[in-house]
Image (cartoon, rainbow, N blue to C red; front, side, top):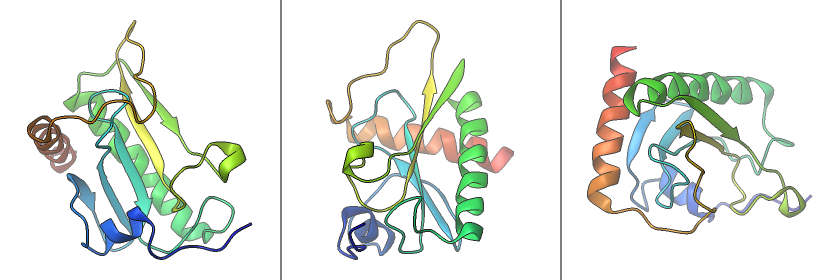
Length: 142
């Protein structure tokens, strides 16, 4: 397995070098909206620890990321009026991983509505800002 690259895009977002539409943050996790969502409210949940993927993260950090992903999923059900949630996580190129910092995709789903193809359409900044506000509010009320 290749080494962790501290200059990957998610590491830069964690360090505040690149902007994001933050939904949740604590000392160990950052969650923000995907700018090319597969469905409205598509959120990325990642550890702040330098972990390339599931294969090299500390178990305690993984457990915390999973717990936050669950919180985000519950909030997304409410904030997005979702009928369900798709959770995705990819490891290494053969497994479909594109950004090499561990992350989970929490994707709110509507009955009968297909997801957009991955990385197909960049969402409007104002739409993302409003979705982030709604998700953060749902989390605050949880």
